[in-house]
Length: 309
Length: 309
Image (tube, rainbow over all chains, first blue to last red):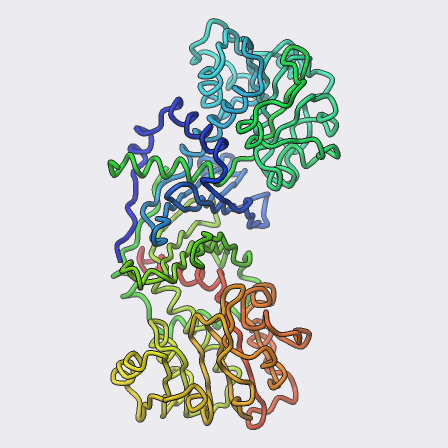
């Protein structure tokens, strides 16, 4: 039996281009018939909130799985990044493993690219101000992705660690970047708000969210995680999740009692916005939990680029 | 970030010794507190009964996952073995992936070794005749494992493809090996019966199973698979599964209405046989579906041997 190839990280990095990843993710959500998946499966490690997650899916000619570990205390212990991930890509012709690759950069790109897809469909087309709460590793990818689909002139940043926000600000290539003193300052007046924290208690008040705003809630991707007040769905004209089963369990929407009217991104990309939604006055909310099909679709593309299909 | 090492198949093969694997599997079942797992997760491919299975677990110092593909038509299509599997081993200290390895040989050894553990606890200690239905790749491992725990003098084989049974017979190192013409001939008169087929319809009648016999039902490891008549539990004095949640969904016991009195192998290895069970007259049945902790425990051992811990 032939072993899968191990794709080096440099090759993955060389093959990730945000516009191409956004195009792929739009295709993933436009054509659900190309894939299938199982909602994330969690294996709790039991100590200190550590967990492992298995994300199996198939997409196009490939099947695969992402196996990720979240160890929040890694940084404080000198153990490096809190997240690690490995992806296996298999052939759908005979099931054989074709490739094994690190899943970190792939996760960052696909997560940001899906935010871009949601932002493209849901936000006002003349949005100019984008705010980001949380300035960790993922935020740079999100900024790049959103700037790919909207002509962003001002970026507002907030992080509990102001040095991190300042450092990110100094590296961003936009007309205007400002670091905010409070979360409220950061939220108010922005056209697009993106939250990227591992918080387990809400820090964005629904009252701060203004008409015409689009929100991307990225941080909550496991049971118990929460960035927005419980009632945030009540102020939204349009609440969209990436996948209902997974988001209702693990996303921001797990805290909402108002789930009946929520749509998924597959529906929006395939069918467009609901009649009557007005970008000028409406508030749209995208609850992202990260789907296994996104990983497998992108890992399949990386594999094809690597072997030169 | 350091990449996991890829352990070559030759290194895996060199490090698999049946007595050591049996000892490890006995420890896995004796000390459930050392591990944890999620029951197998199936991703149906939709065509021709193909499926992928994710098996996440942790055991001892390691976490990990086996990702396996079952493509029953592979052989007929010239695509090689119907099964393929990859295992990722992670550190429980920081979650990082440590090693990636092929999972086929590990699956064969751990499956056979668990059969040996069940056979050691459940079968008559002077059992001499072992029958095997199905002479595929796995059967040789099962024979080796059972011969490790019982002094087997006669082996009886049956396969729909008699040539396969004859070939296996000629390669077995026992006093006496016979290939049977019918399944009934193979079952009757044996002390230990082991079934190893991918059947989806029962072919062993409960009436053929005799007092004093121990049965290992290995084939049924997915919904819809079945080797024994629905009522087989009714003739058994002791019905043991590897794990109740998984076996009741995917094992031979999925077809039984009589699940209340079933025990799991953890219970038997930890607490011994129930009072009143008599090896001379009783019938014991072991329903094996294959557990993720078995894979992770053995893959962890292979990793330690490889890096020289």
